[in-house]
Length: 329
DNA sequence: CGCGTTTGACCAGGC
DNA sequence: AGCCTGGTCAAACGC
Image (cartoon, rainbow, N blue to C red; front, side, top):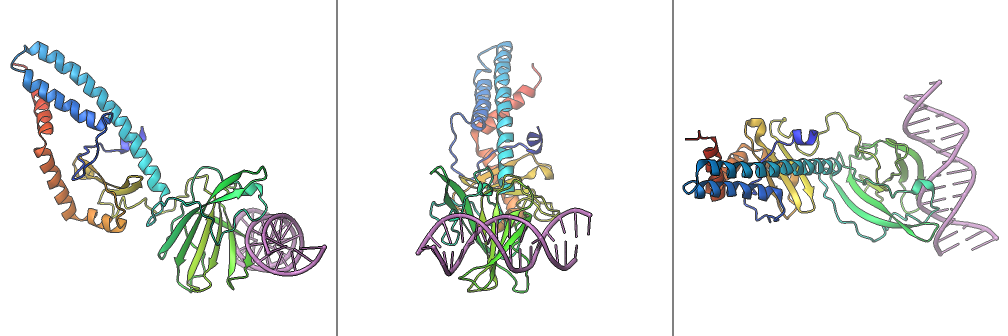
């Protein structure tokens, strides 16, 4: 499996984090199994014959092998999920829980409900801003259907400050085709209407209009969800995976439990991946910079070593592993 | 010639 | 019923 191959596994040290170990967690059971091996090896070595010990060790080994197999699958699955999320999550913008309030500037559902308004497909409205700073709000708008039910349409409103001389539309990584322009009553600037041009069946629409108060601010409203992956662009890199000229194997993804910082040290010859989950949403760019610094990595390695050497279970498991490698006297 | 943009006309909902 | 407005269509146009 590709995801498993690309996932340099991995020793989850949970550095400095009170992560909860579920009893069913393969990650934890794997470590516990190793500890069991250690205790078995150390505790029984003096009271049983070497053949009995070998049988027990073989049974344990089989058990741990199975655990490791499940662990590998789980990590591959988690890795794939994190990659998907990182690809879909725009940079500098966290997923916000969508409210159910209707957008004051997006009267979706007011007009006729056409076939093209069917936006209940999978996907999302994630579209990043490639210039300036953007404020985004996610809104779920209920669009009434002819049969009396309501369809929930994701509406994302983004405000971006641009160079006034820049007449280009908001760049967000998707391909758009303009299909209309209208001067609205409350804004002298014309409103442009765009459809997603990447996939003919993609229902996403986008409205772009300069702010009435500040012409340097462009307000883009996205309606619907893309039913296709984001088009890749040359030079575009997911998250900060290669920040620092590609020498720093760092990636950051965000999930429901908060940001996850993955530092892959395998490229420097190590074999350790640290997964850290925080509760608060940090400044990702700042975190990337910090993670990329040699000081951070040195401190991280030092802390990992401290954690490892201070973990009795780990040292026991290590001792058991060494015992297994020793010739049977 | 093909594709994307422009722009006036048209449609539908709200008042 | 008629007007206003936002949204969409499609022919014309430009590159």
